[in-house]
Image (cartoon, rainbow, N blue to C red; front, side, top):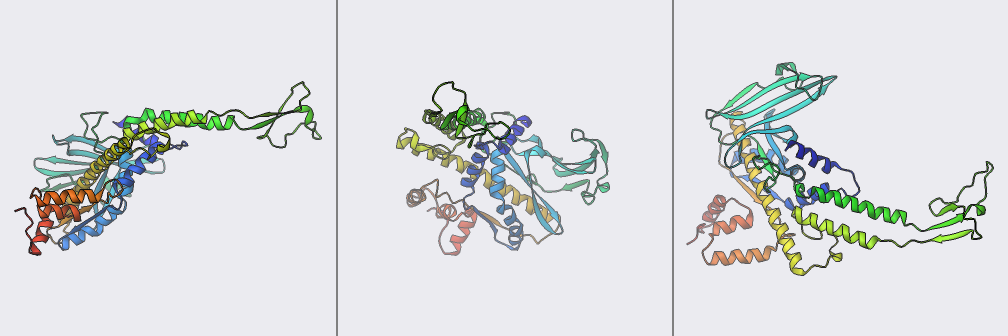
Length: 414
């Protein structure tokens, strides 16, 4: 997994002409977080948590893009000066140690590093469940090399970590105090790992093929530029006896040995065939990354039926909905961790709260068709008014039922 994450990161940072990996991750994140809205409400505690939760939401598109590229990222809240701040941790600095049968990580290590002069300081923060308690342990090391932890030192001896407790024990914690947001695909790299995989992990060879094909296209244009071959006898010499062409891109000099001083050269380009090959590769990449046809490829140059395009959009919609489900789960875990920290540090009085989510999927889904379908289910009593309201307004079902009851309407089906 470590080697795969390094590969995905290299592709994401690649500065080649197409930059396909970063484009795939960026478009995936755009679709998944399009006008995404979420809020914590219901009490004074909710208002307190929501102040800091909004900060995490502001960066959700970037967070989702990094998760799409690297398979997943961690959002870990911490307390500073009476505020709950949230750090985003890349998978290179996150090591899962144990996880339960549902895939929830129950023991993990986080790495934090900084350099000062020739010394490299490393902090290891471990979160684990021990005898029904949630334990956070911190330890620090100093080394002269990035490849070596070095010797153990006290946290109080460091500039940045002197206020961090070596060990914190929390009671009544049911879930980890961090949120791991991952991509929803099965891990084909290591089926025993709880980590997610990059959205483009299955098309890495195709990305390489597309880059090569695009280079062929550029070379075809470059090598096929129209030129005028000029016999050196037709070129004047400068004072040093050197013959200089007026435009080296347009004119090319040769010693023909015949009477023709000028000869036009206009080659036939094979750009159409190369473009068609590139387009087919891009289409296969779209299929392998859950993007609809035409996201990367030119749909005008593909002979496909309307049904195939409709199926590709539905596939993309399902893929994005799965990612949104992971975002919802991850953010719910984040709010849980924030709530525990608020208790642990006595930041605000207790109180119930609700988390609402609203994903604007109007670009990838027919909202009206879905509304009509749910309305028919409501009329037949298959879903309740609370379920209908929760879906339409992005509320939690309990909150929707409570709001309906306050309006004098039953939230449950008859």
